Image (cartoon, rainbow, N blue to C red):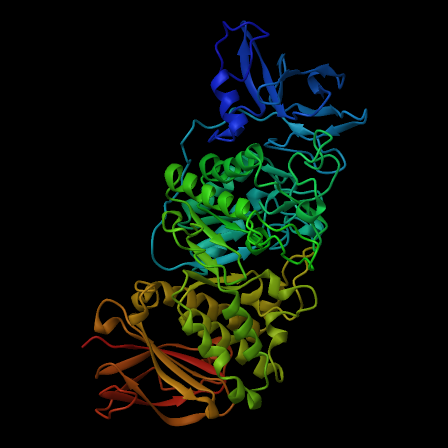
Length: 631
């Protein structure tokens, strides 16, 4: 709150803030730009500020002046227009009328709005004062260990009021949060919730980066949702989109009549795949807008991390562009030096100001050092989606089992690079839309085989090195593609086969979290050991993952054919009894209940370079997890 002794016409932005904003070095630009309740000369009101250096004039309009127009004052040293309005109140709506140099006039939404109307209104709302600097409400911190992420589209998970009515944050706090916690997930990841004009973009074309979408309620309601997530022992990740933005006239596009946030040259500033505009990462103020936004969600709401969308499109100037239709970098190459510097700056700021936050890159190329620290020349991410694993694994599981022996390497190749980055294994929303089919319908065979294959896919993923991500509805074995206009088909759980898949995901999550071997040495290549890697003819694979003690070991054996294999001998690290932790063919999960009666003893028979071995019955199209029984 400003001092009430300041005169009404005193500058809102001081000299130091003006310099920091002009240089793109303001850690928290949202504290000065946007709309801020304050007081002057003993009068309560709101200070407004907007960056538009090339505008000929900006006039403020809103509830407080009956939608008349008041000229704002330009601060030429930083290109920011500002105005204090006595009597303006929290909850009132406003817009900026921007006069361009060519004489055109456009009504614009505040880029720093913390709440906005949905189209066609698009006005910004004056929000209550911000939290103090550097205070994250209930951030739970960055901790090593298991990570099982439940990826959620807020509008279509469940619709408790009416099928045509979107849930609000309080609905999701009541229903989504306890469900995810009970299922054993450690994190909820929300598809982008920043304000976006087109619901069908799923949030990936945002116009209001500082505003939680009004579709789901107020910023205060979103804050309550975050608190509920943390109270349940979960962490929250937001999908974040700094790569591009839509061309909607009311938003960032040609904000002051020039290419302000975007590049002027369409070879740099227009994204051909999505018909969107690309941020000019080389402009200080634009970079400040985005870096500040990353810190804003973590510091103001206590969000635990960000998953950064479309990183590959940021890293390369020729991304999805034919020869001659892109601009090389200063060295004549294809790397986008400015975008790389931007991502590194994001991580430098977060490591310093919010070290508890995690970041995850959706990055599909072989760009080196995505999860290497900035100090070591990397981008600084904590984790990266393993798109190679995802593509190879889904391609393998889509094969009829009779052909799988010829494609054994699709499951083994991922271990050749598993420790080159810190990976998340994603079975995400991208794999169940746009004609790709649901995960269940990617599987070959009749209904029984489809369900069995899906169960074995999940058993394989959860045992494999890497953090886990599963898109909502996958635990229901949804037969249709995801549809953002409808809630998930929860009625499927009335069918034992679908209910069995849900029980399996529940047990996989809880067993994964309980097993030290499956996460404590995840970055240690010596903690993974192939036992059966060359039995392509029978499509059998086996590996062991080691923990801190011998009894921590977790043995995984997969039989990816519909043939039951009896007396299949697999070497194990030590003798004694072993118990089945997971059998994806269990009748509890809708399987045929072929297995090893839950427990078996090892024999002093050498196999696979081990002194002991187990004689196993391998269920059809199934994955087994076995663990030593303490003596």
